[in-house]
Structure formats: structure tokens, C-alpha cells
Amino acid sequence: MDNQYRIETKCVQSGWQPKNGEPRVLPIYQSTTFKYETSEQMGRLFDLEESGYFYTRLQNPTNDFVAQKICDLEGGVAAMLTSSGQAANYYAVFNICEVGDHCIMSASVYGGTFNLLTVTMKKMGIECTVVDPDLPEEELAKAFRPNTKCVIAETIANPTNVILDIEKFANVAHAHGVPLIVDNTFATPINCRPFEWGADIVTHSTTKYMDGHAMAVGGCLVDSGNFDWEKYADKYPGLTTPDESYHGITYTKKFGKGAYITKATAQLMRDLGSIQSPQNAFLLNIGLESLALRVERHCSNAQKVAEFLEAHEKVAWVNYAGLKSNKYHALAQKYLPKGTCGVISFGLKGGRKQSEALMDHLKLAAIVTHVADARTCVLHPASHTHRQMTDEQLRDAGIAPELIRFSVGIENVEDIIADLEQALAQV
Ligand SMILES: *Cc1c(COP(=O)(O)O)cnc(C)c1O
Image 1: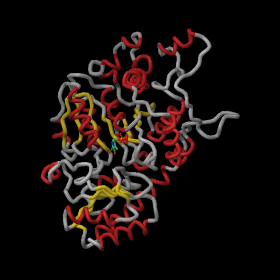
Image 2: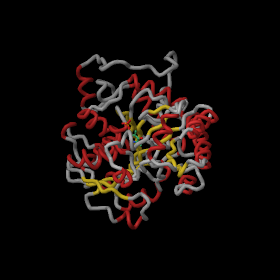
Image 3: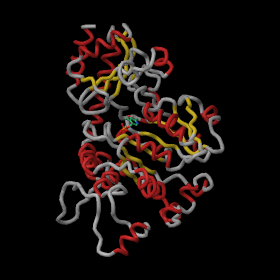
Image 4: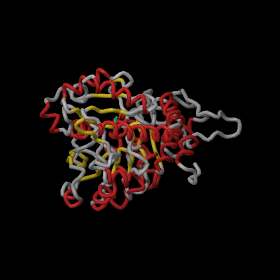
């Protein structure tokens, strides 16, 4: 889409651009397959000699229009949808790493990503070094090895709200000839576009703010087109040497800046099949249309809720980068000047028991595993997502036993605060 448009306009108008007489609204191509007149043409599609749809496991028009919108929002060159955020992060790394390779990951990433890299991908022969994201560049540099192939981190970490110094991470990755992958789920491209700060690949769990209504699990992978794979050709043979499973195509030679996403589609999606359903892509697109409006409200509401909590006598601490007292406030001002996200974590002075009691007294805020949707919701990691851990193990993981993750929705903020007020009065 015309790049002069501002991001709010892109949310609404990018992606599906109907031609004369076509439907105004993005159609759902609810079809596994696509019909051709000659067998020869179908053959050319399979050889990637010609572009076109043939089977929805690889590509579907509905998905591609939505991926195009997210690509425009992030300012990338190519994008693909996946069935979940987990699949997006898996593909992002596995597209450029194989057995014997190594990657570096920020310690504060989402638990699912942490497990993916340190447990499951380790079994596939890919090693991962976990680093403290607040380390200076010289210290981070020590984690690199000759076989390091990428660095992965989150703009705003879920649920610790650690803000990534993207430029620092991009500099150290590029100094070692590897790309930086940034999971931009919590920030969304409305508040931060990591490519503008040097990130090379962006991933999303579209399940969160992008969908925004807790309707559809999904993910997305976006390439900036900026990383020069050919310059480090021996490190990335999957992109720079012939793919025998595609008649000897070399992705960088044939597709240029589209190499990374074409490989992820033609090879990983073909073989692993984590495609998003066109129905879910349609729902995601509706969510994206109001993304800019919702994110603005999530942030202004969360700021007021965080300030209310910080001033409350029963609250021991509040972690929200929008607060001046927060360790990451300066980084948030630099990378996320419009606001961070709607997710706050806090603890009560009475500790774990009191935190649990508070949750039971909340009426508007619902207890759910989800975060980042229109409805305010709340989770106590120590008794839910991390319940197998002892208090000591929780502290080691950076999660206080009394930590409450509070995901501020887009309701009237006075109602959200009143709900917290009445619940706090009862504990
Ligand atoms: C939820 C989440 C994921 C995983 O996404 P799913 O859509 O649940 O698979 C990955 N990264 C971040 C930052 C998340 O919040």
C-alpha cells in the first residue's frame, strides 16, 4: 500500500485492495485448493517458476492479504501468517538454524519461547545461550560463538515488562554478522517498529493485541529485507545454496529480499504445516482494523491503573514502564514514546495469600490465561501458569510469588479502578 499513509490508515486500508466490482470486505477463501487449466501451469507453480496458489497448507489469498497488512504496519518487505505465535518464533529461528548451530536469547522472553528454544529446539541440536538483556554490549558480545546464527528478544517482555534496548541488541548482533529477531507482540507496530531501530526479523503472537478480542490463536513472521544473507553466505547455506527439495533453487539468488519468507513458506510451511486457517485470518483482519484505536486506549487506561496501584497503601510494588519510578522508563520513552502496552504486574504487601484473595474479589476483571485483549483480565502466575514451581524457583525465574499480571482492557478506566478498589478493600 501507498507508503505515505500513516499507521492508523494502514490498519484499516492495507492488505486487501478490491478492484472494480470486487467485494469491499476481504473475502475468506475457504478452499484447500485452487484450479488450473493446464497441467503444465500447475507444474510451474510447484517449481516456484510462477507465483500462484495451489494448496492452502502453503499459501492462501486471505492469509496473504492479512500478512501484507502486518508487513505494511511493520515496514517490512515480506510476511507470512502462522497458526500461532509459537509457530512464528519456531519458524523465525529454524529458517536459519540447523543441527550444530547456536543462538542467543534474552532471559526475559515469554515462557513459551523460553521452553521452545531451551528444551525443544535443543533436542533438535540447536543450542541456546540465555543472556541478561540489561548487560552492556561488551558483556553480550561474550555470548557469541562462530556457529551463532541469530539473536532473539522481545520489545516488551511478557510478563516482566522488561523493555529491550533494540539498538544495543542490533549492534551487537550485526557486529557478529547475525540477524536480530524481535518478538513485537506486546508493543505492536502501533507503539514500536523494531525495524526502525535495526531489528532484521519481527515475529508476533497475533493472538494478543492484533486480534484483540481473544477470538483466534495466530502468529506472523515479517522480514525487513535488510539482512545481507549473501555477505555471510557460508553461515546461511539454507538461503544461499541450492535447495534440492526445490529443484536446486537458491532463495537469495531467485528471490532477493524475499528470500527469507519464501524459504519459510516453500520449505518450512510445506514440511511442518503450521498454517493459519483463512477463517482466523479474516477475524485477525477485523482486529487489525481497530488496532491503533485499541492500543491507544489500552495504554492510557493502563497508565491510570498503574498510577492508582502505585499510590495504594496495600500495594507493595508495581511494574509498568509507563511509571516514572520504573527501571525501564527511559528505554520506554525512547522506543515507545506513545505508550508501552496494557499489561501491568504488581504485588500486594500481604504476599502470595493476599494476591490470591484479591483475584477472587475482582468482578469486572476476569481470571483467564489470556492477556492483551479488549476485556480486562488477570492471572496469578504462581497459582496458574507456573503452579508447579516452589516460591524459591519462582523467584529465580524473576516471578515473585505475589505477582499479579493485570491486563488492562478498553473499558471505561473508572470502572476498572473501582473494581480494583473494592477488591483491595476486602483483602
Ligand atoms: C503469547 C505469546 C507468544 C506465543 O503465542 P501463541 O499465539 O500463544 O502461540 C509468543 N510471544 C509472546 C510475547 C507472547 O505473548
